[in-house]
Image 1 (cartoon, helix red, strand yellow):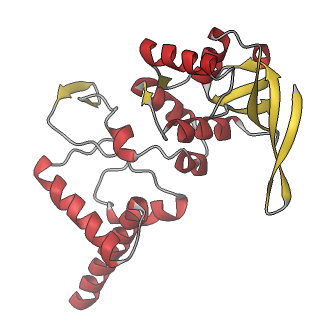
Image 2 (image 1 turned 135 degrees about the vertical axis):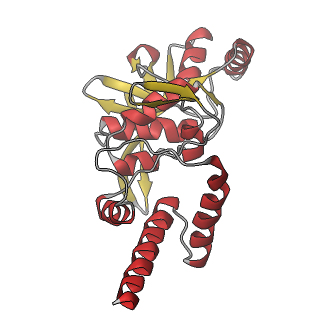
Amino acid sequence: MEKIIELQSEGKPTNVWIAKVELGELKEQDKNARIMSKDMFDQLKQNIHNKGGLLESLPFCAMTDKGIEIISGHHRVRASRAAGLVEINIILDMSGLTQDEIVSKQLSHNSISGIDDEQILLELYESIQDVDEKIASFIDAEEVKSLIPTDVSIGELSIGLDFHSVNLMFLPNQLEDFTVALDLIEKGDDVAVADLVHWDKFKEAVNKTRSVENIKSVGMALAKMCQIAIKHYEDKDEEGE
């Protein structure tokens, strides 16, 4: 590996390099959601060959205890090998990224363009433990929701339904309000089924809350709705006293 230059931000080193490496030094991720057709791969290989080995978009990699791991650019690396190259330039993060940070960056870089294998995409997303890194992965909740099987499992019963499934993830400070607002649900239940006719009303309520309260996050809008519901029924209790 040869360090060419260290990138800077506001005049300060970033611990991110442009480096020249031998292709044999690069290690692929065990899972990569990005897929590419044979025609597209052959075209990429031909483009690299025609440009004398020049990569117009450099693979992004990280130095870890495993060596130099590819985060994005797996197909560019494979196409470079197929084009007969021995070494290429890469962007190399030397900051010591965690596994969650690597997977998050892998997903966020892949989300810019291309096609994903949805099952692998879901597995990678669910492997991230850190909430902030899940958010930083830029995986849309609707995209993740679309990967959920169309069978709903309730206890021992598995049935096919016409339904919308919504995953709600709460930070600790939001969970308390949600728990209070839904105190009629039996403790321990992890599946709740509502009539599909209420779905549009639910979306309307969430979007109305986001608009009136100037909230962008759906999660924060749900937290605000919980606060509104709790305040409403507390006021009714006081009126009844």
